[in-house]
Image (cartoon, rainbow, N blue to C red; front, side, top):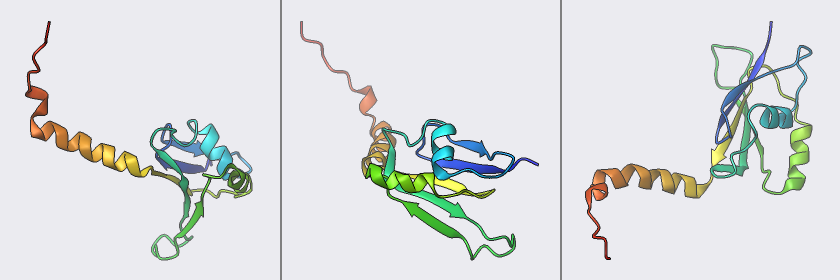
Length: 122
């Protein structure tokens, strides 16, 4: 039976990373093979998380969140050593400016600014 790691958030492409048959892969594998890694425009390399649930499906309390700050490229070496487990979730957070930009994109259409006619000066 194939096992997967889920790569979500601000990555180039959200995806399901298939673990090799021996179930050995590291965080760097999932980030770089699944869809090109952290989105250069919206992803925050300081906010990379591996979320790992407990074995008991009825008890969600033992969820672990492992954090990687890859803003400093030297820290990315840890991504080559953090072994992933089946059903881990790799989450990449957003840049602060991305949240601001998304908010503006939602507000501007509601202001009706797209209906303004700007005169052309010839």
